[in-house]
Amino acid sequence: MNTSPHLRPARIGILVLNLGTPEAPTRLAVRAYLKQFLSDPRVVEIPRLIWWFILHGIILPIRSGASAKKYASIWLKEGSPLLVYSQAQARGLQERFDKSNPNVIVDLAMRYGKPSIAEVLERFQLENVDRLLLLPLYPQYSATTSASSFDEVFHVLKRWRNQPELRLIKHYHDNSAYIEALRRQISGYWDQNGRPDFASGAKLVMSFHGLPKRNLMQGDPYHCECLKTGRLLGEALGLEPSHYHVTFQSRFGRAEWLKPYTAITLEDLGKKSCPQIDIVCPGFPADCLETLEEIAMEGQEIFHEHGGGEYRYIPCLNDDPAFISALEHIAQAHMHGWLDHSDSEAELALRERRAQEAAAKIAAEAK
Image (cartoon, rainbow, N blue to C red):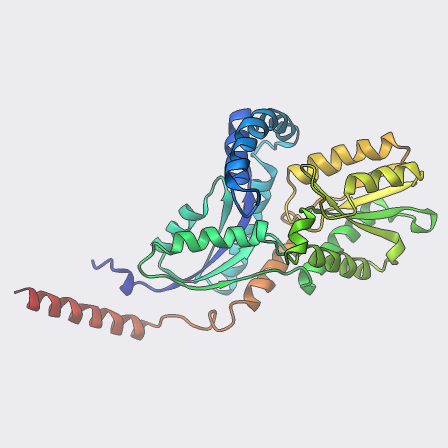
């Protein structure tokens, strides 16, 4: 049987991209992950030689053990929450396309760690994917996340002889389906646990991952996109601007980062005897260390230590059907013209005949 890729139906691949996670909540596994993550010049823009000594001499020896303990506190029986929920999102998206267009293959890859972008693209190559859509699980674009993931895809594809047609989704921070999924997630939590009494001073805090302010000043649109997501979500929930705060978490180092800082906001609200905080992380589609440990655990400690009242963490979208539906909607919007195209039997027969004619010609010339 002729197994030439030219004789097999061409397929559409959707590569779902996320940041990554250690393979285990151990010091060695966390060290390996942090080394790969923090060696990316898109993530840390300090001169390489200076950063190498800081990373290997200070950060990795000290931070690996402390981070491993934090990972252990949120690790699921099935593994890392980020990986478990991201895989569920990719599976859910695949199931939806199985019903509407079986020619589509969906798979998850991590920018750092496993499954790697290279190994997933290799699978796509074996499946004869000739149209490839990059779908990052970063609703708000940043060079540190989206661009870095795209860079790695380009790096892998430059070694392919027959490259696929490529489209990428830069962002969907203001996509109506994404905003609606967030609204439903928060409203559903309130339906089950009670809506905050905003009239008495309760607040909703929307915490996004932070970045150095330098990134914003050099043109990274992330800060503006987070603010827009927060505004649209507040409007969708029917909130007044005074009812919620948009903040930025996970500050690292001494440089100024995007403000207001989540930790300082929680501290200030505690000192003002805020009766209740509901906190959500709209920029994280899947729960992870930054949401489950930093926000749900450390955030609560900060708020209570400074006199705050009730503190409630609202989980991320994870495998919520509304978010899977939003991902399908976003993907379809970027696949215009692709889903209508498929290889007919006649096209395949013509392709096979031409391949056979070319092979016969080569054989004749060789004689």
